[in-house]
Amino acid sequence: MTGTLERRIAGLFPRKQHHYYVRSKLRTDPLYTAIHRELRDSDLPLLDLGCGLGVLAFYLREKGLTFPIHSLDYDELKIRYAEQAIPASGFSDLTFAFHDARNGLPEHAGNVTILDILQFFTPEQQETLLHQAASNVLPGGKLVVRSCVRDASWRFRVTILGDLLARGTFWMKAAPTHYPTADDFSRILSPFGKVDITPLWGGTPFNNHLIVLNRQ
Image 1 (spheres, rainbow, N blue to C red):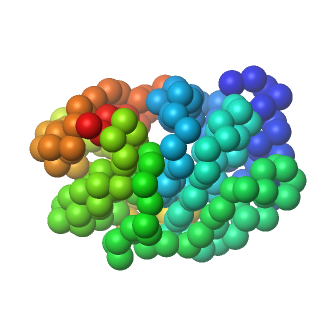
Image 2: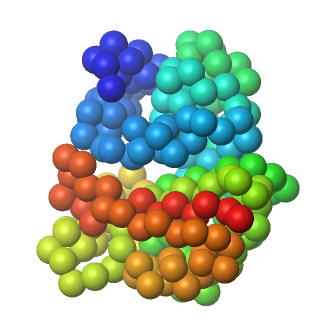
């Protein structure tokens, strides 16, 4: 990540709290480079679930990826800010929309990302969403999930505190409900193809992992 690219994306958000949040995320969070690495050789359209302010979509465009990206989030205000950033970005083909993934997914065939939202779902809702998302991935495509994994580590305990703080400051609209285990991901997704689960800690104390389904 170059400083110029980081500043350019953060500069799309005029509100100070958003500007510095985005700069910090791009500087410390390995999510964006990881997803770019997974999708850079694909031309399949991407359904981006849990997009927040839309940073991933803007990042992938800045890195030269041109496949269609449709980004969804449960927070209508964040979607509004993402839409407001489109003109300054120059990427008029990006689309953002409010959507509650508990009500199912829109029609899609391609790649899918699910970012940092599973902990707000019940175990049954998580399994349903993962099944639906995997079913929307074309053969040769990928489902890429970033999620905290429930285990006995100190990182897991820190992640819980971080999610509760995010709720307490109203950055997130809900408190966490359930954190899946690595075995949960393997059990649910393995029928669809090869599943790889790796830590994605970066410069953070959180127990985030990258779960990648290569659809067969």
